[in-house]
Image (tube, rainbow, N blue to C red; front, side, top):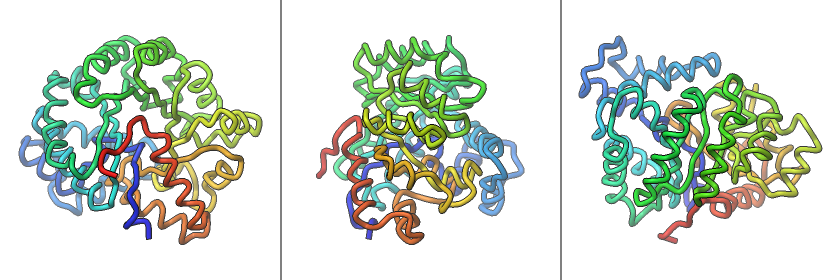
Length: 317
């Protein structure tokens, strides 16, 4: 059913869309010294026992990206797959610190290559970019990344994000970054309440003044805070399969998405890192329907939230 309906994807990491086939292409093209040489090897890489295993895989894949031109291939493959799913609007999250500061790649050349790929698909899908400051890179590099984001709106950059290790790098470190971004007209989003507790979400909302929360599922730990989220209509970008594969939750049935919905919290459904988790946005909707967690009417409402809380609007509807 949902495969035929136009959709928006608001929480998807550009680097997390690299398919096994594309990864092998990058390994060969960039002469990466690794034991991973077959699709079976990649399948093993994409099997995780915990969140840290996932991060190790994510870092390995990111390290297979060696040139600015690689981003044209990655973006093209991502958009091709999204169009197949009838996704008409997407806000990919791109993490410059991993490439600009660690590999000395040219930020603006990366964006040029991302946009070269987008040109081939823009009649079928609208894309705006979110720039991830990456918690783990610290406060100083966060400011440098923010300055890059502020200078790149012509490339479709509409906002910033904050991903990475929320336990060891709390959102409060980046309060000045986010308030400056908002003051300069950028939209803001923060990963929170995925691995750290509801206080992480509360900090992102009350101190960083974010427009959206990535994940946010630990908000269920505090009923009063759930009421606050519902009242303020601060949307949570929920990624069920991601949470299951990183063992943030034990099963779809035990996922707090239903409680969030019942409490009136606005949620969107997303795939996060689809190829890493063997899922996609259509699959997320179908699983929740098949398992009886939501009915069709409720899922259509959640689907509409993807457009309602997007930082831009699709040009092709």
